Length: 126
Image (cartoon, rainbow, N blue to C red; front, side):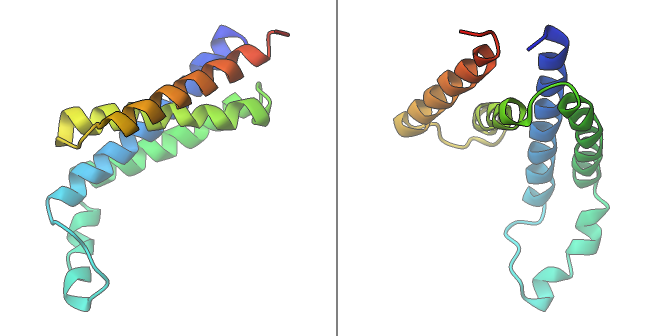
């Protein structure tokens, strides 16, 4: 995989991760949402909040970047690279939202990182 292709994939992954984090930030303003009519009444206001709109914009741009990336990289290599987002989001959620990173989560992140590296290097004929 070329450096440019990897950069496209990484850009798409980072935009997707940013979208998730923005959506989480937006939902924290209203707390847990259930499917009751009273709870659903917060959705219109939530949908227009800056973090939610920002997250949706990141998703839109990530789709465009992802389409360009898929035009250059085999889907069997590109799609699993989305796992980088798990790593980014776990660490960012720990920093931004105080979510826990226990030993099991850290081990899982390590396994994902090894798998992503193996995939990235698989196209080199190794």
